[in-house]
Image (cartoon, rainbow, N blue to C red; front, side):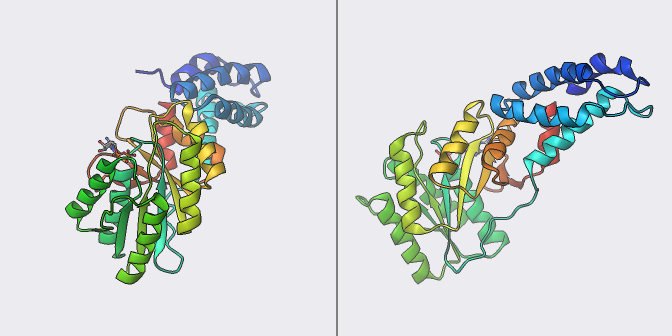
Length: 296
Ligand code: GDP
């Protein structure tokens, strides 16, 4: 589909083998290709800029070795820098707080929030033996509440009974209270999304946060989010304050550039990735795999 970065850089740089150090000009030519590759992988433009600056610093003046082609050398620098920027792997959901630990899921409508809430609840409950309660705070779409209830039924995880007419903050308070009474270790709050970020959504998220005092706030985002990823992550982080990211639809064709964009603007760890519609399609984040995928 795409020419790999290695091939592109090979044709630009490999004639330089045995010619001392990479010059500013060689590196600039290579970085044009790096830029193209990252943009094709859907990394946001402002993140691409910062990234290529870092690669430039390391590549200019780097000795061209006999044992490795200059193209490969730059690909290695790019790959290492990508892995560094993508951050650590295997960062767990932090449950290190008095029970019930509240995990708040936020994100746009259709990002996979409800599905991911179910997946996380299933993992905590089945694998980690944590008694988990799920609650849908989506008062705008009754179907969303029903979807979570059904997920609970499928997986055998408790869901908060649906009461019509309550506000999201009232439901949040009721969920925490029910978890205390029910002896639950964890409460997962599946909040409402919108098709795009707007002020009422941000206010609603901030109100829920103030009421439920979540220990984790996870932003769920579709891996296919393109240039919008930066805005999305920045808004949720600045307005609500996220503690981590979950990328869904990593089973799709996307190259996963959104992972780099969102991590770069928030500095928050990518905790998990969604790899399918089923309840067990949730995996640890491996920065090397995403770096490979971004580079094609
Ligand atoms: P919400 O509006 O954010 O709560 O989104 P949903 O959880 O309802 O998910 C929207 C659609 O995306 C559903 O059809 C899910 O089955 C699907 N979905 C969620 N996560 C994944 C994933 O990781 N991979 C795939 N292929 N589909 C997913």
